Length: 196
Image 1 (cartoon, rainbow, N blue to C red):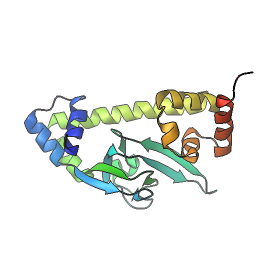
Image 2: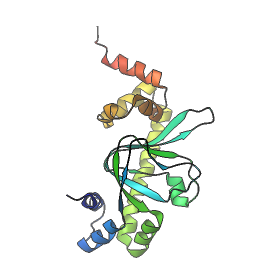
Image 3: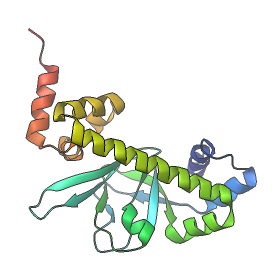
Image 4: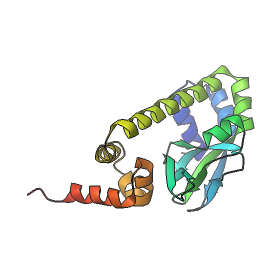
């Protein structure tokens, strides 16, 4: 299956595109290869695109005044990533978005997405559903961070994304879950210790 067909298969799970609509939709995306540690978005530059991950992994993060990194978003295959505040409002980004592995992405520009949404209500529906799912996910994550202990957050992360525990560096997972790497290491060690 060609890479652009992947985005059509994904989109058709949300909205029933005809073959003609599918052709228009996938023509709006460009394939992009990024190397591990390569930045695709940096603070102070406007995010002109959003990215769909075909293969690889990325993270979006901010750096606080004390130099701490705070991971806001992770993305693997079939997930989207950008600095959404920058992308939606076309204003300077506040986040770094970088590849954690060599990655293959489909990129859509703000202009191309706007043209799609203006041309056909099905395209607009697709992007609305993406936005709704993103808001719901971020709300669940915020509630989890406020209501659950670090141990509970890590257990939920492993339950929902078992492969990521081995795919992402420990410092990235710790940052995403709002804890230090040392504390995450302690939690992981406790989980693998044999029960006496």
